[in-house]
Length: 166
Image (cartoon, rainbow, N blue to C red; front, side, top):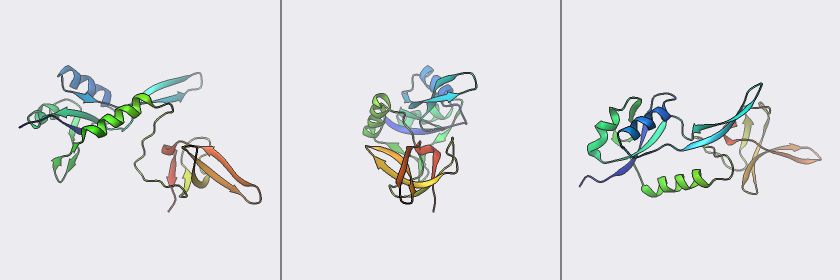
């Protein structure tokens, strides 16, 4: 039995949206989670839709259709586990879709694991170079800077902008 399953497909650099268009044209079910990011130029601000997980798009196909997906321009390979395309459970894709579609705040995806209390440094933005500790307040992650005799200064910093200090 050749059932439909979800798989992650690695794409060539910055071609996720084009790959989605090509898969749509071939009537291959796919999902490209996007996040909105505000880009600032000297004369304007604009919200742009960027892939939540850069370099990847999800496809729902039977094993018979692997070659059809791989022959799509911009597709590099399937995400594999022990050299076999790794199936992704339907419920994980469903949860990801729900989060992307119903999130109130901007969604970030980070590849490194961070835990509350980790010593971190800010790698981007106005606060670049700032070192502090990761804290969680009211469900939001913040960086805390301890000021001797005063307590802590807290600010929200995008998780993608910080790096754990070992």
